[in-house]
Image (cartoon, rainbow, N blue to C red):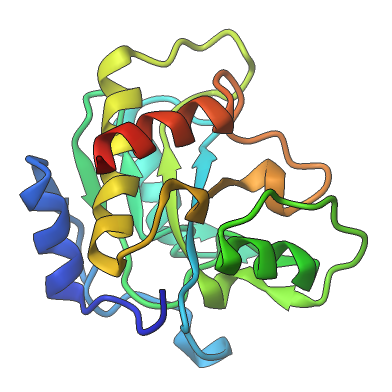
Length: 196
């Protein structure tokens, strides 16, 4: 991947996968670009929200918290499988991580364990927050898993990348558990099959 998709191209890529995309407020210009550049983009990061209720989830992902301002991702994938567009540009979703991990994403190789935090993931990764409590008990409906698969595949397809460009937050940053409730290897297999 390289140059981020335009806001319009991002919307079109998702609609081409059959999604209903809900536009939230000033989603085309809501970002954290004043904190640094966005791009080149090298992958897609999947998160769980630790929230319930779509309206509250979308609002938190758009606005953030006092200690972590929003947007907290580019898109929210709700339990009902609709995608909510909350930001475009740099977002507060990935944080810092080892450059070796980013290099593996770029090369689409197996991810190494990282041991330092020297690379800004907010600059290099698209972020999808997925509505789920993240407690290992809140179910992931089959339709929502399919929506995650389709959304990530849409981004990979646009950039000519494979499923190895899709990672979980837990694979990027030590101590993170998301997404909890399914494995990223199983999700990458689904994305791989869809890209075929």
